[in-house]
Length: 498
Ligand code: GLU
Image 1 (cartoon, rainbow, N blue to C red):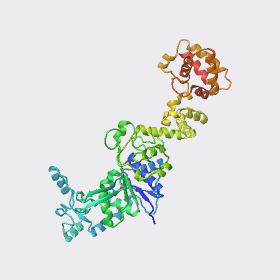
Image 2: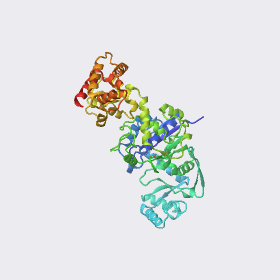
Image 3: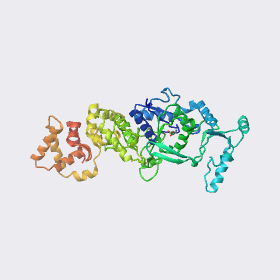
Image 4: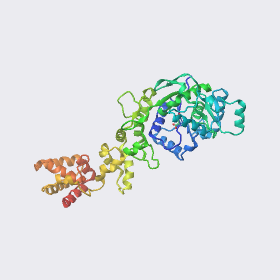
């Protein structure tokens, strides 16, 4: 029988979710859904010093906003809870002790000061201090001390940690779905601490124990965890457990130059790096991105569908996603391209939805018009917008007469005979019964022909007085929308003012 696919997203609640973390969550979600599996959220909060209030709630809200909710996790108890490591605290020590019993781990009593001194001595010689097979018998631990000495120290309440006994002279063959086989010489590994003097497990122990107990089949996480893979696979062997499969996702790189995308890049470049606003840092949601666009651009950061397709719904992503198509090399973050994704998603949205969103802003500005009017406005300008936030600037003249006119355009378009021509346009418009775009267009054009005027003498100044600028969609569409009285009023006002 095939095992049910179970994946987990395992953030530490040390702050807001960075866009890279969100992508890790997304890839886990896509893989789970593609394989009819479970997507688990596990909060790795064993490091009390780095705990940040509100971070967990933020992470959950971000996942929900993106439309990629977890199946099991805090607040959605399944069969494998609790899902916060702090609530599983009492469980880990016995596993550390089990490894001691099996001869795979040991007690170490070296004080922080002693270890620090070793580090400094090594540094002075240009070396790095590693605690492992080559020196462990010279240090203070249950491998170098007698049983009695160890018992006495523990009985006396001395601080200790439990370290993993990493093997000497072994070539480790690690497997990663994205990277293939990786060879590691075990001699470079240090004897990592599994259990700390404060009674808490380290990340490594808690992570492995929980992945095992929660029956995780695939570990999909960021490349920064690749260096831990050797230890993790040794831990599975030491316990005698089947290891899950691993996939380490490529880093998300700066828009320009080398290196990993950071919060500072966002500050410098004026783009978000968090899904939701956190303290002073604006999030994608607040910047006006659609969650669909964020999911879409994140999916294509490091994964490729193998086709030219760029716009994907979540369902389409689930359908096409495979870990084999995740790239090995870093994925460059491109804020411009992200805006483009939003522009594309904006065109996919219905005019109703967009009008609904826009009306909130209009209300705030004190503009009150019918929803059907807003819908028509949105339909005529949305092509030019990346965000709903752009709507007002693109369409203000639909809701209010120009308060000023673009100076350059006035100089160029407003000639001596223009007021007279505009006055005649007013008369032409007054005679149009059915004030509808093509009707206005036909009538005005026929009149231009009759009078043997040039289009250049009529159309640009007409746009200028209606819009206040040379921008906007088809002029007769605008006039039809704002209506006959308003169009005429604007022309007359301009004749007076210019
Ligand atoms: N708690 C780790 C983190 O913050 C989890 C890494 C993993 O997925 O194993 O990213």
